[in-house]
Image (cartoon, rainbow, N blue to C red; front, top):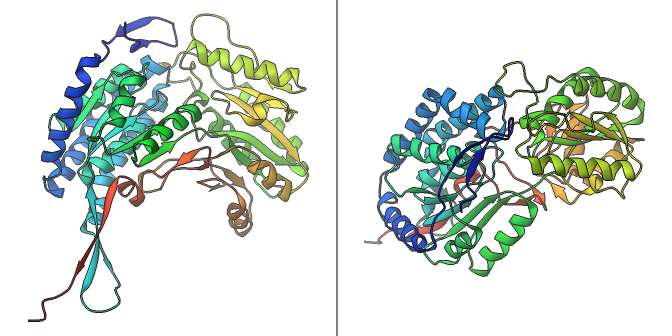
Length: 460
């Protein structure tokens, strides 16, 4: 029986199930993908870019239909769903226009006669393993640059967003992408491992949990395949004494609750210097306690349900453990009654190092606030994490923020803002938040043959 099914997290209702890939079909997928690569890589850059441009148009035209599926499958509010699709449109447009010039190659300064150029060529079929929290965006940032480059894709999506997976593949077909240049597979973990091990697959990208990343990275390394891993985050949000506290508290609420709190780059650890701690906590707790929560199809809703019952249970365990280890619940802290996988916006203070919440990622609308005496302690606490994805610094002194950003162990630093993805900005982290980068110009290099061509002119 397949575990690929849509269960509405707002109601618990089973909406639809999809059949799983049979073991006997894996070889066919690999063969089709290899054949498609031999055709797609030979298409002109202009042709490949035109498909991406048309995909952007179709995402725009079908926004409401695509958004409704996100709300039904994972509980994303309609506003958030539309926002995700807007970001996807930007990614496809960026790689169909601005990024195309990068494929012209780079002229290199050389010692001696002749000339040299660094080309970006495709390497072959890639396997993508994607999570449920951003079913279109996560795939777009992997697929768009690689399809432009000339690679082809086998995509294994999360089991709880199969409709989104099917719609993404269908949209690319409608945009003119040849059959088998992008193959959606409802595959098992063992089947994906078989694909990664196959010589026809040339690279692997995974966005997901730390554990899944470790397993996938090990498998890719064993078979000498390049890999990009975008994993978890426990992103610090530093508030200094010269910050605009009103803005910081308002941004803190929005930053923690993006996508119902289920975002790797969501602000999670709020580190506030003593001088403004009480003021910040009062405003932050006030904002979190008043967040409109409920039906994700209601335009007034800001916080919808979590993706599943298991997600709610995970948060309950985190909060109970934190409280048992001395933490205080300032607001929220208990699941909402009634049908659906709802958990309220929650703020914890006094979390100690013995609590799981101090080290592990809280994937839901639970914030942890820390009081620190000064800037240096704030930096040290921010870096006291196994993760290093995104971070925020709030201060009126931009030079000070630049200095602090150099000390933060994170792949991204936002000054007076929470993390916001954009097609032209590289995305990725350090430490246990993963390896490699996506988006921006660097997104075209992760699975490219960066080929040196050295030319010596004929002396005659």
